[in-house]
Image 1 (cartoon, rainbow, N blue to C red):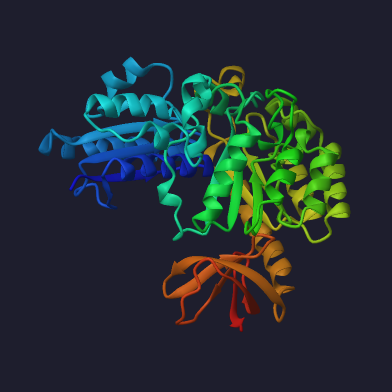
Image 2: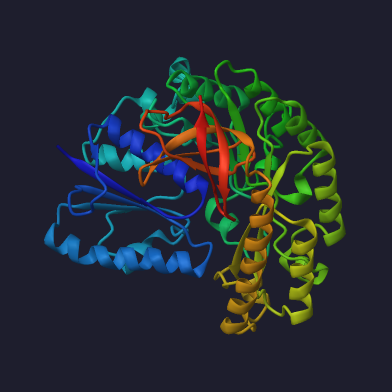
Length: 449
């Protein structure tokens, strides 16, 4: 029995793409293993959005050198944002790797696999969950042919699934490598997405998360220009689908129509991720974010006005080139004011080839970055603790996603992580849980039958 192991780091898009690759390998007769030592084929799905992620990729690649020497027949594949346009340079630098392919480029993977004598039905590879579309594959544009591999790994054992709906990004924020690695925005057709989700639901999926580097831009490049609100309305009508989420949002593209869709569609969850990145206008301008602090503040007010039960997450970068102590305090004060449920904070690290790396000197010392990062983390722990404590004694609805350390876990519609203990099997079920403990990061409770 041939075995494969997939190592994934980075965003939800990477996780979704790893699921598709796993589905392809499953359908080709491979069996999954968590151990590199047991695998005949290893796939690294990589991220270079931050230096820390790239360091982990490099460490893993270097660690595989010895394994390749011991087992020359081992196949090592690398995809994700580590793979740039200089494939020949990557091959020269990492001779232990058999094949590099761009993120989401399933046709490249398929061509390589065929060359190795690995075959599965074209229908499963290129049409994903939509068998009726098999006859039209040859006429699809190349970007649709690469849309997704077979999705068998999203079977009834997994109640939640990621669904990429738009690839790439046109924004070119000055610090971000993503547009250079994933290219321009390309939306997937509405009917194809609806078809795929319907098939997922038939296999037991209860919740989907629509994915895009800038998910709010969905549809602008499609005939008729359907938007994300239109797609949400279509998906909301699918029987037995319970919940719909979407990310990642860009504040400048969060339209009133989209806010209205979240407020009015019963299956769309009351949770939004809206990255602020900085709370100072000069830093936002240098980041090329396309909005001001006041515009962002008004957006949050509008969202909360129309969706009173909404929970909000945001991203923050500290130590962007030239960030003064005063500018950092502007960000800190904005977080104090807006009180997010979750804040993801990272220290700036220059990404070669980006606008910021060429235009600005990385002049904020590492110790200052770490101090600012820790200060925001401490603030957010306090805010999240206060917000979550308000749920103590209340009953919340939880979709059970799995087990961890002898406890079931799942999330509320507002994306709160909830743990509870029980001997029965609850995977994929919607349960009522009474919260008896809370922390900044999760809730603990008991099921109510």
